[in-house]
Length: 377
Image 1 (cartoon, rainbow, N blue to C red):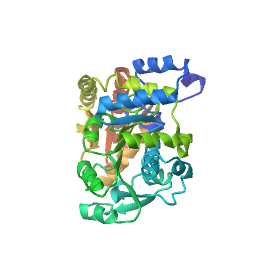
Image 2: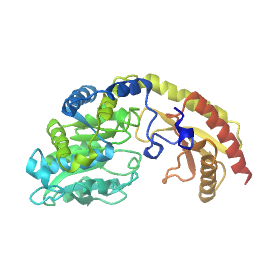
Image 3: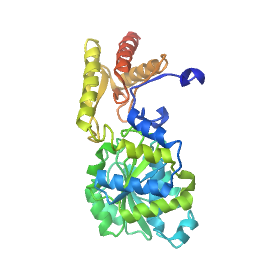
Image 4: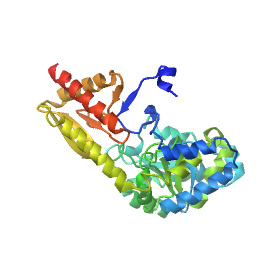
């Protein structure tokens, strides 16, 4: 089925990332086959979630797990679970939090925007935000002072490139501080799926990830963590979570993804990404006026990116060239999407994880042409 032609949609060469605005990852064929197989049947969703809980626990080392509509839904439902537990009256009462612990402590530098403010996802449950530290840093004393507030329900942290440069408290230490205060630690790790075992080992109580990014499943989220909190999270679907429920295709997609590459074969998957990075670096190596280098993932996810910089330019001038190159690439047919981080506006980053070999060829051709035109301006 030629969807691009039928609905007049733009074709995309995705060298940006497995991003929501680009409709997530290309679903792996073996995962798509499992999802297709479920579409013609009915299931009890509770049984599907039970199967997901067992699978996520086995694969990640967590006590239990579940599937959500997305990682953002996992934030709201996880916070709700810390306030209500399994109390059905409290679940039906939300977002009115009268009589409940309803404050969530978060390091100030973790109040990020991932396409929406993470604090808004927390407040959707009815919770109030208590910030600790400053936008630049947070220390144990800062967090402990914030935990002295009345009615604290949880500590919340973000594990992503948004916070990779923040001078804050490491997750394992954060979990210990939260537990000493008698509250759980919740973690939003939306693009950190391939680090799930490592994140579970920090002692965090609930970790929410995307499924439609590095697990390469259909749109969904997954949660790994404490059995009782996961159970309480699932019960939110009888309350404020009703509009965030996940369907059979999301749950089956997660189950299939855990049997697939890259989860089961990270090393061979990374070898493929390294090969694509090498091809791009070779193609760009003869262009005077730029420097193209291998760049490790800021959160130690198991792959590298390509970073492109313009040589010999002041930061502002380099930033202007980068914006021009990004715009030129996006106007092409097919459109080439590349990433520019707000923290390093003078660099272009290329992510190979959504590129086939054919797309790598098209990307290299587009880069050589548009870099040349940008250098001529």
